[in-house]
Length: 345
Image 1: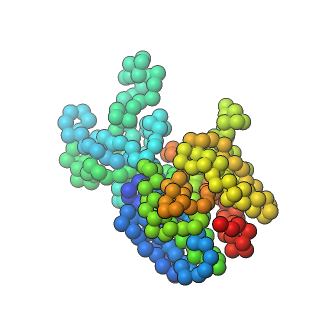
Image 2: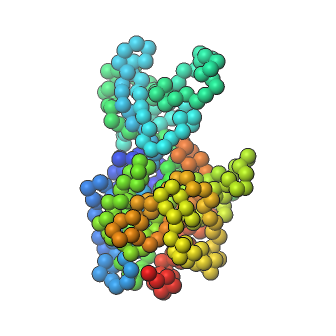
């Protein structure tokens, strides 16, 4: 299953090579052209010479992760690894989590001072990231340095699995779920130029998307994204950003974008016409690649289709497979209706 393969692939921000290789293998022979730009974006093209609006679909390949910044070489902590985050990670979710370091997947465990050795005041607040470390079982610094070096990246060692009622758990659904949707969409046949941008470094500032959009200069763009889902016990109804199983989400406003009203309503009405469940994303915080794309050149019309992800940016995330399927249905319906002229620039 493609979502499983993408979820388990190693691809923290700035280290997206393995994910890119998976996607390239999936699209080989199914698109007219593929190229990798200077930043590492993979851009796939179909029908570049066709008439009609130039449509760009986007999904970012990177996931939140960690970077090794020091190998401790003296005292009791010799051989332990100090690290910092790549992207936004809540330090409260890190203690005792297993990780893989580098593409060779060196196993490690995130450690901290045991609770029974902590002072009372330390127990009242999360352990800051600078007091955590990765333990790879090294006997000393030399042993650690034989397999790891500063600058190496790490990801959570989480395996994909399906469970419950049409749910899946795994790492990096933000945004490997979008990558899976985009791979499938690039197999479509449409009567206009279609560009698929698999971008890098979204988690540290939408960097790859800006460069990709500058190259493509699209007329219409849609970002495919895993988005925050807070629908658990204790969440007031007005604070439930999205609800798992209620369909893909469309955005009115986030930290980088105020939605193009015509296009947002076009996507909403398209969902309704095709009997696809859909919901509005009901928080302002966070963003996605469309926040960078829509400001390129003379400005770009479009929006985003988001799959709700519970526990986003955590070691284990949860999605509804029905939401993933319905996001794919919505995207295909939108592409079809653009072809039929239901939305005009």
